[in-house]
Image (cartoon, rainbow, N blue to C red; front, side):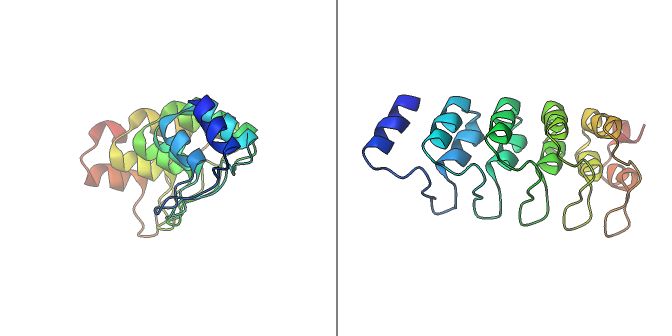
Length: 171
């Protein structure tokens, strides 16, 4: 629907207007993985870093949904791959939470840290362990993330996996 975006912009529609929840057109395009829309909006002057309420950036949202192509396009357009949400959760953290291994790898290749914890001290490995995402844990470890770093409460990824009954994550 790039033609519709261009037509609306030509008629004076703002490409940076936020909805009540803070979502911008770029962010909603990232949420759906619509790369062509992201490119068109950026070409029309839309911000690729503007966060929604809660601090969720377009890269964060693309990572949450596993939209690797959107992540790559956003980064190529100048979007930060490390900007955390208000809770400190980074795009790598949210990709780990959702088990999106390809997104984790793409973010790391683009310079995102696989070590940065959320505000509660939970690292991406800890977050993946909590959800039982074994492949995400393995990918993060292969990228150099520690499997022993505890969260602020002292729980390591093994504690969190055990607490949630994720036996495969412990093996």
